[in-house]
Amino acid sequence: MSTGSWERCRVTLFYIDIDAFFCAITAVQKRELRGRPFVVSHRGATARILSASAEARRLGVRRGDALSVARKKQPDLNVEQPDFRLFERAATRIAQTLAGFAPRMEPRGYGRFVLDMRGMHALYPRLPDTACRIRQEIQRITCLDSHFGIAENKLVGAIAAKESQLQEEALMLVPAGDEAGFLSPLPCRAMPEWRYRRIREHLRDLNMTQIQHIQLVPRSVFCLAVGPFAAALHEHAFGIDLMPVTPPAASENLAANHAFTPPTNDDHVLRAELFHLVERLGFQLRRRELGTDEIQLFMRFRDGLNRRRRQKCAFCQNDLELYREVRKGFQAMYNRRQAVQQIAISLNGLAPFHRQLELFPTPDSRQDELQAGLDAIRRRFGVSSIRYGQFGVKRRPPLGDRGQRPRTA
Image (cartoon, rainbow, N blue to C red; front, top):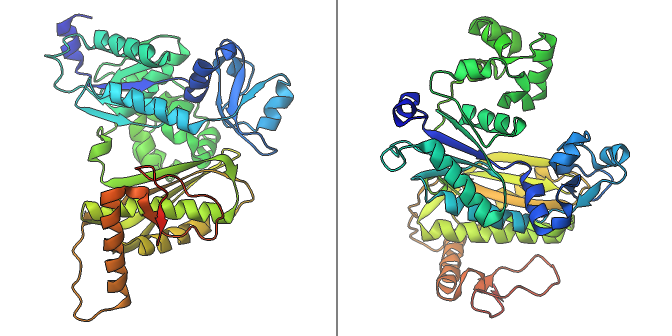
């Protein structure tokens, strides 16, 4: 494609997708798995597959399937335990590499990234060649193959990247204005709303198997027939997506997570790690003189089931106040007998925090003074140098940032 024709396309976004990211990383570490059918999953009676290699998918094994069912289909199927720390390191390294190609980069999960290439025509006259260069760079640093969807928005870019995988091509370009024509012959399962069971049932009842069937129905009639998410689904069927590329640094939230190796259902251990995440986030809040009024919790169980919860709270920045709110959400989410693989906390709704001055000492003011003293020690000796007791968990505390054992308050 010439430079002039490229400019007429006006596509401004790269959607990068690494197929079966967990399996791809595992195959890099264990070369004997290359070319063989295997899955990444925990082992257990109710475990579900987190990722399936291309060879396993050809045998009918899919991500999200129960491991017991997959073993009945393929008794010789290789099962590898997930290493989320390894996956996180690989994803971080790829993100750091991609950030050097564009001013705005957004991670979309493990193995998926978005680059905003607006205003980069002078630096990269032929952006398809730039996509090939980025693909080679990812392959050089991680030995992973990536697929590119080049389009005007994230929705079409994601679908184009997935189609490039299915057609075994390195990239797929959708010129601006051709989104509806590109989506028309694709099946409805390509739409992001397909993951909602209610939407799937409505589309099957209406015998809508392709996106062009949605395009032929007027929006008012479609919303009346389908119900929730119908308006967004109808817009997405025409390739309309106004969501901008949001870099991690520009997002107004703070997040921390912890992966348990091995997974555990020990209540003391879970609550201790939960409080340690709160301590880390609270220290960052106070350091930036911010407060939060919204907490989002994430929990991944050993069998692959994920749960999320978003809740409002009183505007605060103190560790104990934050933990009281986090514990409420944790108790509401943790009602299964399955062991927990990962927990994460995200603080949203950040705003400048101005402390109310008290004329006389109160329990809250004393707690704030104690918190300020703890933060002073952490700023000097490291975040892990001092922390609250671990709720009766009998284990040696980890080393601090400078090698000494942390003190407990």
